[in-house]
Length: 72
Image 1 (tube, rainbow, N blue to C red):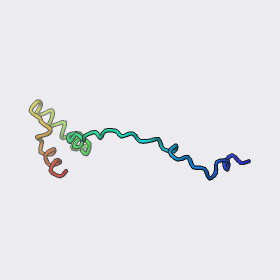
Image 2 (image 1 turned 135 degrees about the vertical axis):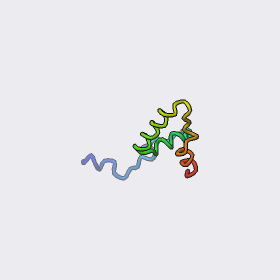
Image 3 (image 1 turned 90 degrees about the vertical axis):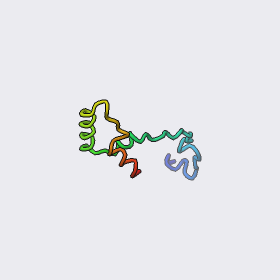
Image 4 (image 1 turned 30 degrees about the vertical axis):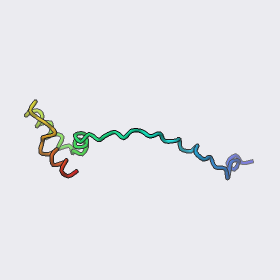
């Protein structure tokens, strides 16, 4: 007998995909979302701004971040 036809017509309900457990939805960090959408040029500009402004640089008060939040 052909092994491929041995189980023909039988269904394995519930065994093909493991049961999904509910995982808590992780809140999206807006700063990380902003960084993730940045292109290479914007990343360079960000690093220059951080270096030039030092401790006074605040991502959440930057023009680019504020514009990103308005579009969101």
